[in-house]
Length: 231
Length: 184
Image 1: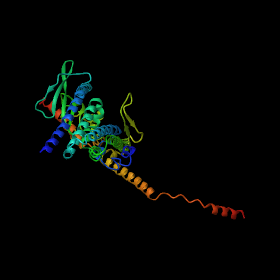
Image 2: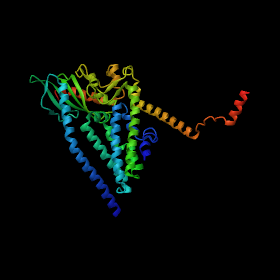
Image 3: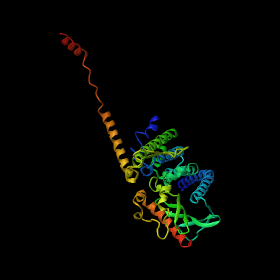
Image 4: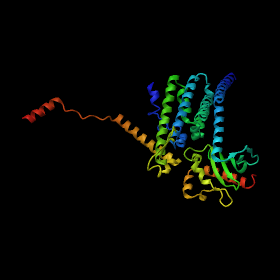
């Protein structure tokens, strides 16, 4: 059961391993605050759609399952969009069209088709949480690198007297602007994917060729050698 | 036949429940969203016209870019206009509110609504971005509608979001022409 939760975070991370939902990932990862808003939206929609699709799996006819999934997903996305516009208008403004585009985010439809439509409610719920957190963490990592090096800032939510922007001395005045552009998103994504592939390869090798500890010398041999040194 | 009918009824039921649920959510959120938009407009008008007031909005029927005109009043006398403009951006329509002097000069501008890319076109929402248009719009100093009309630093700021820049520029230039040519 725990595996259903953790697999989305590490082993089957939607961004770096399954490589789903890359369009919004590349588009909104310009600022950390966008990653948080988008991540929260995707977690909510994933949870809602996985729960409902799992509950209705015996009711939804096989032939029209995809249109039915799209209706359910689009409804949850519209709820997120309306709620964000009403209660978090600045985040809604920042994310713009990408909230609406969660409807066609492959992670949501992918999990509905491959998982929620075949599994129990509890498993689907854990899968949604794990995949949602995995997506959010991946998005956060890319946006943190892009914003820090591409703009020299870390943008969070403003509160009190804090305007929400942490300016990094040195980088804020001379950022590597290419990282904030679309090409920078592809570059960062490529390097991170290569890094995770390398990590996976190392793990594979370690599993195949486990490190053999140096064999301790046999007791009799030790005894004879100490006798030899004494003489 | 029976299978098709059952399939249709089930799909209809799912759509009907979804529509009902969305209607309920809309009932809760709609007044808040409308209130937020009114607040935003009121705040923007106040920021664009410090020390002055704006009169009743006047619809502009024939111009596809200029939607509404708000006369700017100082001591009851009209001294300029605030125009509600619509431009075309990268992700959809751009809604711009700009204050003009009678000469067509842009005194202040603000991007109210857009669907631009976060981190790129979205930069047009910042007050710093709109500063590059302030003071332009007269016959001798036209609104920059090409990147080569901008100083190097400002041209740098619009890099990566040229379509947004063109959308904002063309709408502001049309507003300027509208004011200069007797609001036509």
